[in-house]
Every structure is written in structure tokens, then in C-alpha cells.
Length: 96
Image (tube, rainbow, N blue to C red; front, side, top):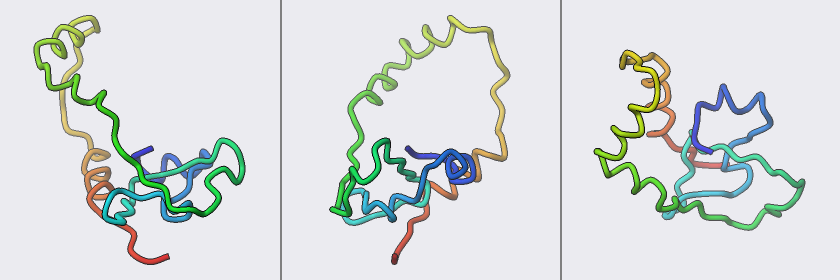
């Protein structure tokens, strides 16, 4: 899960580094949080996160606009949490 650690740690998530889950190149993003649903299942081996292809669906901007039109309009605006997430998602954890 990628998110603000302040939101996910109270819900039982921990740093990806603690479970040895990383991106290619041994990158451990600060914003990548892990929660074992069964204790011990990640057993200390190195695990690699790879993003699925579902995000490619968002490249069809017409389909996204049609989908968004199904919901009441909301004012699009910048939130401070967006900057906070940007900082977390662009920083990494180096050493254990």
C-alpha cells in the first residue's frame, strides 16, 4: 500500500523495509507500507513489489471523464496532504 505512514501505521501497517519488500533496484519508498494478513507469511525473504496494469485504464481520458460524470461534481483543489504524500512518495529508506 502506498500512503501517508501517519494514516496507515495506526491501522497495523509497517515500513516496507521491515518486511524486506522493495521496488526493483532495492528501493524502499517511505510511502510503501506493508501489513501481513497472516503473521510470518513474508518470512524475511526479499520481496519485490510490481505495479499491475490496471493503472493503464486511466490513460483513456474520455473514459475517465465519463466515469467521473456519474458522480456529483466536486471542486478540484489542492490539499496540503497532497504535498505531504508527494514528499513521502519521493523519499526512500536507506539502511535497516
